[in-house]
Length: 392
Image (tube, rainbow, N blue to C red):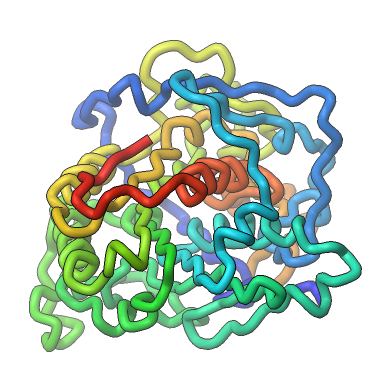
């Protein structure tokens, strides 16, 4: 099939010039369990091919990256063995079902990864007829595997609730305003899905305080400034209330993805004087002991955990990918990506301080690992409805 344009945006994600990250001195300690595991390099594995469904925003090798070492690492948890990712088995699990990712461009990044992982089980000769993109249709992108009557979908809702960044094409606004009690506009598209995978994080980092409409009927300029962690928790309370009211746990399983970190400050991992953001990084952070601080706002992680624990009717599994991803400074799209719908020019690539994307990830790459964790949960038997929310 013809190579798709960047889904939803069609032109590559706008990269914030500055992310407002909390100072380390006000950071809570990071429990050791979040980093319980290690990266293992697959020395003899061949380079993974880039599938035809990936967009130019994430195909780093096609876009000029010369090293492929970022594809050769996998995460080995210390407390368990992950089952082998079986794309055919997953498609059988998804037969006559809908798997939907909901959230921001990092969930779109993960959705593209999942599309390619499941499409690997479809014979090449059949892909054109059996595997089909339906969309983009407004905020929705859908990949359909016809033989299985299965869909893998992505819905654009960067804050989950309504905001002035909801337009799937024109969402690069300087002042983001969030209506923290308004979710119905988005949520009506989610109700029929069998597996829901939510995220929201990176779009919260533009300001230390969020502009919030406490009254959903208020005019956009009638906002209140609210500290980021408080606003984040209140938005998740709105989301959790909707999930508990409208999701049938016998029909739908719900997951919440942990925070995807960015690597824009090389001093955080001991980068040399010539290091610029994540540009030219070819290895993960290795041989590091003790807490790793690269600017992740763990207060938001704590807020998500607290809200998930408070849910009573619908179990929600927290897929905790943050700590393992913090080590992967090598895996971002960097200067091998799009800006305004066009590949970066040689001049732009030579200016990583301005143009390097240290938020999104190359594919194949790290989001495949996230989906490996998600696959382990989807392949497992459904938990009892009364089971409390959990994390891994």
